[in-house]
Image (cartoon, rainbow, N blue to C red; front, side, top):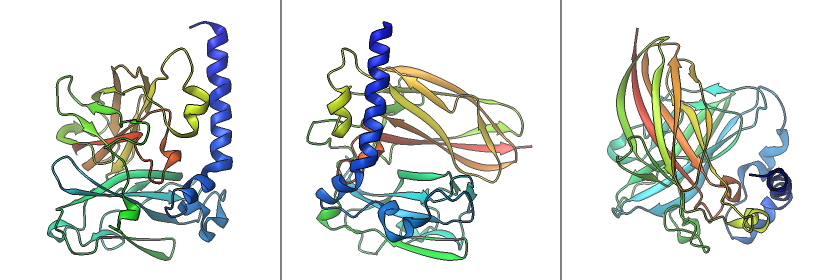
Length: 300
């Protein structure tokens, strides 16, 4: 890639991010979906470093390929410097899910900022009980229900108006494919405290770009790569990734990381694969990222 094209990509990417910041509220309002949580009155405390709340956010629902329903949730940690851990239990539970299990794969580790569609509660199509994410922190209680009206249908796996489909991920080269917020879950793998565990992931994308990003990047002479990010999702101790973020060619490639754990226990790691359209276009258009999960049992 020559220097001129590199400069063009960087410039256009910067413009895209700036434009997203100015237009996110207008776009979401125009789509007829609820405003992003950070645009609501509780968002007044944006930028404070600690002591602020983590708020659950309901993103919408979609029908999976097997006919079941996925209810997509994200969250907003208003702290700029404080990461919160809230174990599954009375302060972090799903109400109304399948079999009444309070653990439906919700995060217990909350990174700073807004995170869209980090997990789904999966229910049968005929499920009638209301599903709620109940989260308590910083002395406040949040009780966020899932709304299954047609206004909340999202295009997480069906593709958006531009026929942009979510990226795909596998944890073995010829393994099961994860796509959309639900993705796939593998494991449990076995690890020991303080010893690194190797994780490999194969990702690919259709190369299409949607939303505002397409205005700036869509006509470049090459297809932008996709981002593969690793996160601690659940678990009692600290988790460190040697390569927390990797760039993967959209036509497909492998990314590897070494992960270490500070304490014994059961962990759930999340790999998110995001194309250049990005979760910032959240609303009806949630076509552009995929989650998948790795269970790890860590012993001393």
